[in-house]
Image 1 (tube, helix red, strand yellow):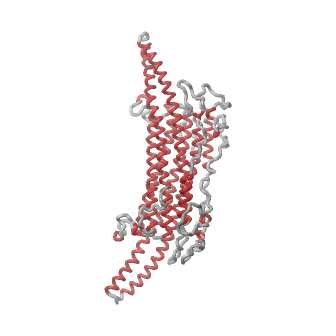
Image 2 (cartoon, chains in turn blue, yellow):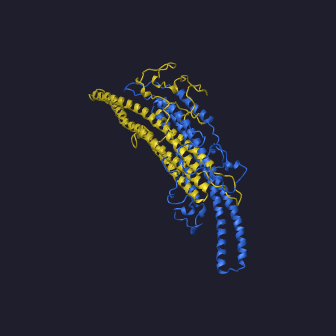
Length: 308
Length: 308
């Protein structure tokens, strides 16, 4: 991971929160708003499309893996070598199971994609509210220049107040949905990553045991191989792998979700030292360092390193 | 893993070592030998092609993952929400690293594919030796019927002896290469599977820590969110992830390779109870159960379960 601590390609020379102006693509001028997707939801729209490609790739990987597993077994049978025949068949079972896990992973990614869609749909529905508000404000601005005494101004001002109230709700909904669903979406992806990984480790380790049953010491021409006598053991290894997969359980998530906190939001700026982040003071981040910069290599929390 | 203990689709109603007749594909009659690929190497030829598809799928997955990572970060910046901006950027770094691991995995699969190619090439080169031997034997057979006293018979018999000697070497080479490279190829795949899995677990766990920094408690319309103050911590999480990835080391393989044994092969059938498999008596399989059938759920070895 010898990269920078940000993945943003357009970060240099700009503020961290540069907002919409930070967009490098050609079609995001405000004047083009709504031509294809509303500006607000366009980026996520594209991301969700890419996510689809990712899901397809993992599905393909799973399918090819399962096909290879069968082919390996059939090739092994074809060699007329009893040891190779048995081991290739059993390794095939292991590989096939890995393929199924790849497919299950793709399904979990699809679930995560569904959550991102919820954000996108909310973004899409908030856009007209923003547009409506700024349209009325623009009208008022123009009218004030042209006819400062117009009776229509009062009506427009009333409309603006209503539009602002409506938009206030919409923006709060967007903020709430975005944070919740973003967290959920990536919690699902990370959980699926861990599940695929842990189960494939189980399979790979038992796969190695299977390989160890294959005698690969060279034979001299004319000499016969020792008879193969590990078929019972090979079967036992598959049983062990099956048992280990059955016993697998997901670790509980390392953090409590902030939504468990009854106090939804606190106004005003918290001082740097006080732990006002009540809803965020989870075990994993309890001793967080409030100082700016000065990132040293020391761990600032009590979290155990993974994979010990 | 609720499948059978074999992956072979054509197993039912046949002996376990049914050999070439077990082939279900149309083009494997002996009469078609050599039209495309020699019969002997055809199955592996196809498998290696499928392996190529598998590699491409993982490469695509890696590429899409990295693209999504950048898109997520850019989307987050666009939301004008400082917390989402920072977390999405950092989660993007984690996802991008996962994509790189997917790509590294594809490379390892390619290495494994190269080892399978060695087997296929040997199969290909052994085919003419088999064909040559049987051609001479056929000729002798025919000549004995037609001209039992022919002087050419002596020459052919000598040729057959030479062809048989040559084939004996070729078959031994094939057996040696096949067993060695098959083991190596899948050892590489299993090692790569474990590496990708363990590293992605590291990343996913730190990814979860990042998500925990995002307050998703709902806000009431009009209320402001608490200011985001976890950027230092988020940076520290990336540093921790980087440190953990740097510290990662492959576990040593669980078994000693039988090729370390000085005795290449023992003729004759070993009795069921004696541990003649000297070269195979590795720690992982030392107490193997020599009995036939009767596979019960008990572990028959002292191997610790993975992922404790």
